[in-house]
Length: 453
Image 1 (cartoon, one colour):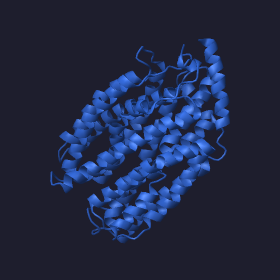
Image 2 (image 1 turned 135 degrees about the horizontal axis):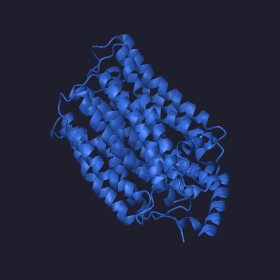
Image 3 (image 1 turned 180 degrees about the vertical axis):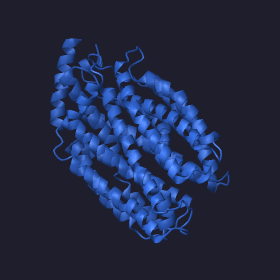
């Protein structure tokens, strides 16, 4: 009997920890792509800021095209090993090679073609790995509240991966092992080693149930049909807004704290670290709130609180490291809510689609969400182009830039993310897939799948 014929068992914490293990290296890539690598290639490799932004935007736009094909391929996959796990295995050597070339092997003077080629390989592997894990999570726990728990574990390990990878360059600098560039290279080695270890453990320790459903059909028309669903449209718009906001924060963080607040690179890295640690602390709060008032309302509340706390934290004057660290920690408490609740909500929407069409399009639906996130990353790089247009220079300290360019930096770093976060809460008004509606969908799926089996 398939797992969809009866409601799935509650997964143990050990299984969820093993499942979430690959988040450690994948999250390291996730923070490196919008934060570490653009700044590293502009400052240490020596590419112009506008060139770096253009290359990252071009590759991300190409990568967006890959996602629906990967999602469609996942939905079509049928092996004894599972539907999503084979794809995660395929991603492992691709990601290991790209980590080696992007972090470790690259030398000052590498040109735009080098960055473009290896960034494209990295994004391909990253798309396959992340989509495989998200689809796997959706079938691992189909119930409304248990799904929040699975994606909550997923997000906690993501944040742990981010924290660990952010600590590495600082440890390298503070212990005298090397400079910041050496820290980035060690970051690459850490990712390269962690990938086969964590993914291998997940393959061994975690089962993969398979949903009942006809093979996907319809090609591009089926992909476009998903956008007609109110549930999907609201999720995608919210994801876009919640992706652009922290994307802008990450891409401009070192410039803002260096040139506006007067902190050095290591101190700015520590502020980011406190911000992500707060996300780790706050994640269980939002998961709990989702079980009380529903995922959509919990996310709307978290987004509004996030907007207020973020703007307040960025307006604190510089010069006091402890105070700034404290307010950045407080501002980071809602950080994780959108990342895991939106994915749990998309998995719920996948159940709605499967009930209406009889087709399991989980992989395709997560590919749409992934594409929206990447569009957000592209949009988040537009401030680089704006800053270059107003004459801003990527310098390590507060000297050498005009008052107007520094004002533009503050507007882009403070006001724009705050407005986007508040906008996400507004978009979620009238979200149709309530906990009660999802319970009805699950009951109908269980009855239908039992009859099919």
